[in-house]
Image (cartoon, rainbow over all chains, first blue to last red; front, side, top):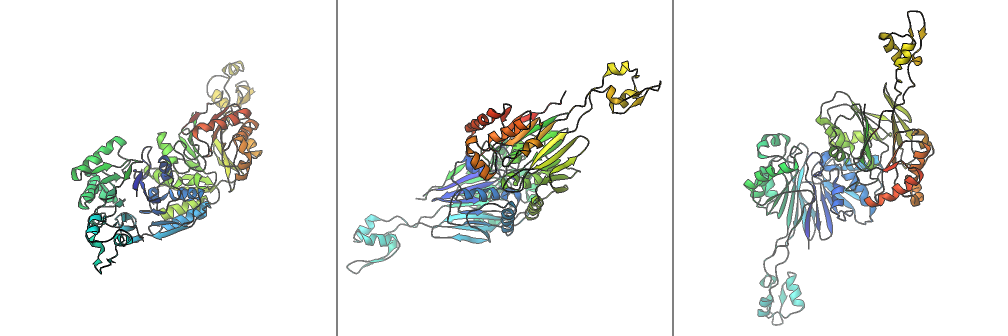
Length: 307
Length: 307
């Protein structure tokens, strides 16, 4: 089962010719999740040739124009396909007012249900397969980061061990694999964990922008297979970053290191850096955390299943 | 004095990788005028490398998402420069509500005055040098076309004729050139038009999208040096076009021919046509009006002074 992450844009504040506004899409088992939606997000989706018009959930970090003005277009164009399920959009309190105002004033044709929910810190989606959580960031407006995490999968069934324990092949194997205990014809009870290997952890992706540095971010993203994180400024701009409540690339790397993530992809670059100058952000980050890449528009990640 | 027209986008309904949403900019004697502002307009401006952050006036055709959702970004980024003059935005009645809602909900930092005016049919800007007029179109929502037209310039001063009439070189020449009559020392009165050639007409640009075909459009755009006009569908789609209240390329050409314009640039293409299929729109238009070009993103026109 694929868990793919597509970076749709890496620019902060304003879109540039080669850098759309910061946004990402996750595709997992046919479901689509969009993180932020600045102006131009749909062009990136089109360029990636993703069949994106049935997005399941959208997660908005905060109500600044560069993170939300692409929403009206996305909501309208999603009406070009038929869908039964509603689209849920999570974000800060004023998100509903924004969606409602745009729908009303632009009189948009929308052929499906839209649900807008406030992304309160904590778990906001919880089903059999995964959770999505929001956690507080510190910006000039209410802002949250998001973590999408698969639940543990069962361990590997040990056929040799089952045979040694005289469990006959057939329905009893299935029960053990589903975590149930079984009773053999001779009365012996076999517990599932006698034949099942250790549970295998799921995959985890975190999305963090825009924020001042907070030690709590590392806790929230702990153990992520992929952390998409704002790295707006070079290390020498730390003061400016703090003032504007943004992260330097070094701070992003510190979060990645302290959170023991597997890989960090930087994004939300200041327009002050030309495309070739982004190498300085990478340099700053890699001094602290080696497995860092410069996120670029339309870069994709296929997170492997563990074990 | 330059009168330049830049096509910022040519797509209708949704932005495509090579076709931004329909929008155009006029630059005349240092003043900037923006026509429509869909999502992504600022990327086109950036690509053209225009210093666009002091737009004087914006003209919105109608309140559909593909013509206005780029406004919040443009308004916000215009705050990156200092300006004393207000920015005036003309458009349909609900424009003010849209601008206000976005400013309020997104809490945008804007460091200059924004005036929103309803573009009632007739002259909406009138100064010494040019007028801008709005005229009604027929779409699914209130929609207007725009005409920007320079006023006539004085004719050429005929030096030979002035000498024949014994007007001494000096201040009297200046008076005649400014359209005043002068009295010579011998009492003869010389009228300005005795020495001045015919007045020279100014340049005219028209912007027409989205609309069903109306014969009145040709009257409004009559004599334009450049007509930017929607040509959304091929001729065989005329019924669909009428239903959706859009123009075929043939209808755009009919308007250009009947309005005796010098040049027609098509735009606002349906996403159903790939880039190479746009040639069919051109073919349809040129059957009716030869001086037609396929408008393309970032195409520019430099309208020459007459005579």
